[in-house]
Length: 163
Image (tube, rainbow, N blue to C red; front, top):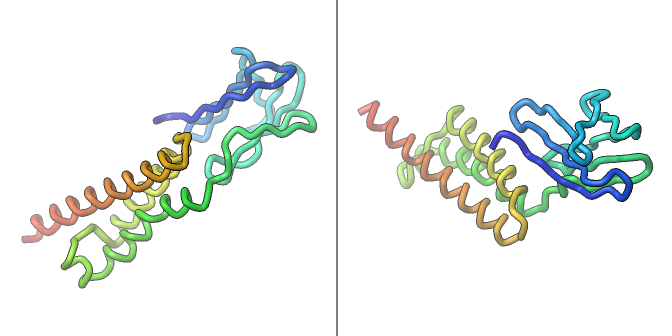
């Protein structure tokens, strides 16, 4: 998963495809297969018309052409946000409690927090790609389960290495 891409239909300009590299943040726009000229990081020239990209992947994104605004990425819903932060919050709280780690060991501290944060970002990105609320919820819960499994296996590896 290197880039995210969204397509909209404009009444005059035809099919507009917005692409953003998730690692570098580099944005590009094509209108009917013709690349738009980049003016700034967020401003483009499409067939002589200025187009401005507003927002981001997480808070919602739109393309403004003239007076019209076209939604590229919907705003995150409350359940997407809750499911996205769940891995980070769980690992930061559970992983830093010695008593809780006796019940179910997971990696904590800076390593656990960094891993949980990374998985939270991936969770939101993957949920954004799903179409229905049910698939978004299942994706969020699935990535939370994967996060717990990996954090558990990392904790067992650290315990074995210290023993």
